[in-house]
Image 1 (cartoon, one colour):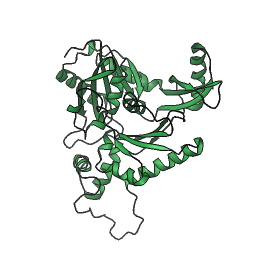
Image 2 (tube, rainbow, N blue to C red):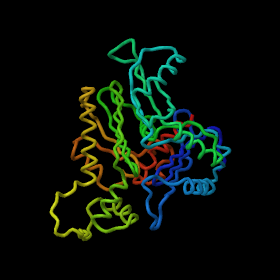
Image 3 (cartoon, rainbow, N blue to C red):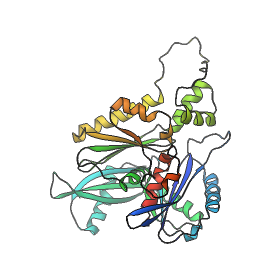
Length: 354
């Protein structure tokens, strides 16, 4: 396949797998080109909680490009993303000013609002609109990462012979996969839970309400570790079991070495995740007064956990949807619905490839 200028390529390099999506736009419609997941761990390889090494990622992507007949030098519209503890997004209010002044002012403002690692920051922003409560101010979404992380990402793309294009934040790309194809409610907010391998990003988005996002240090690998410890499985067995059966397996529970010890039973990973979501939402309601949550949308590989949507629905009694980012894309029905939420970031990137 040779890519025309109208093709957009989204590249999501995660810590568990790599996702590649291409899409072509015709007026207000999108048509799916390719969609592929490249696992980084197969067989009995040990999952690296620090993330895969460049020496593993590069050949995997090159092999996938060859298989998909993608010529990196001919990709004209590329969007990729960065993630981790050294990325952040935050909404602030500021007085309206010309673009040149806005850029300069926000660079210094970002350092006050977005804690990173103390080194040089790379900052971008998007004006969300006028503040309904203060007419002389505008709502601005700040997005930032460190120069070190950004430069490492640029180097990886160049090693792949790709011309760097848009670089987004992982959590924002997942939200964009929904925002491009849907409209926010006039009142209330929508919550997004992007459950990756190492972490979960909770984001709250509304037309009139403050944008909020928070990283929770629990993800799909924590589910695997619970199953491994409870049932004596290896990592691959746990990964397959959580998708096909959920967190309660029809297997004998592994006996603890401390058979005589008395202690408190550890809370399940799901309950810990819910506790962190509750804590975040309580903070949001306290800060904004907005408690009208219309729906939860689950994305990321961790959302493939069987029963996780029912679990959150029972806890919050509002619609909880495993978001299929291919729902409104021509040709998207070729992607199995159970794997679709894992593509949310790559789809959000591909649709933003302009």
